[in-house]
Length: 200
Image (cartoon, rainbow, N blue to C red; front, side, top):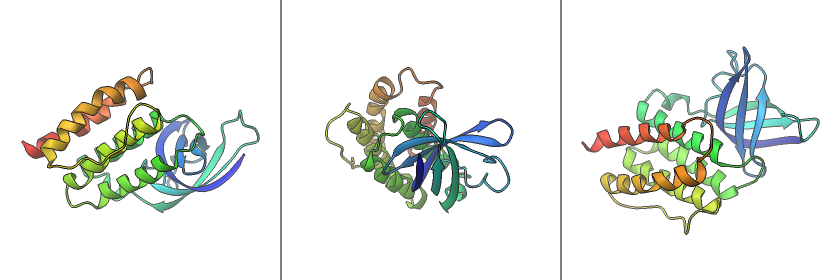
C-alpha cells in the first residue's frame, strides 16, 4: 500500500517513547491508521495536533501491517487550541470521527464536511457561527453510517441549537459509540457544558 494524499489528522496517540499511532481521514481512502516515527519529537509535535490538515505519505508492505506515515503540515489548528471552547469543539469532532468511522472506507461527504466544520470553528466570530455546523456534521455522520435521515444544517439562536444538540446525544452514543473503548461522549459533555455557560 502506497498513499499520498491531503488528510485531516483526527487522532494521535503516544506509542513508545517518541512515536505515535495516528488516524488520518482522507477523501479517497477514508480513515487510515498509521505509525508515525518521531511523532512526539520537537519537529513533528506541532504537526501531530488533531484537527490539523496535512499532506501524508503512507506506506505498508502488506495489507495486514500497520502502515508507516510521514505527514507534512498544510494548515495548523494549534493557535486555536489554547482557547478552551475551541479546543473542546475540535477535540470532540476529531474524537467522534476517529472512533465512529470504520477503517479504509471512503466517505467523501464526511471528509469535506469535517474540513468545513474545523474551518468554521477556527474562523467564526462566535460559537453561534459553528454550533449549527457541528450539529449538521453529527447528523451527516449518523446518516452516512446508516442511522439517520436527511442531513440538514439547523438554524436558530444558540439556546435553540443546544436543544437540538441535546437531542442528538442519545443516537450518537447508542449507534456510533456503543462498545467503543474510552468515554468519547465525555468530550461532548464538556463541550456542551462550555456552550451552556455562554447563555447563562
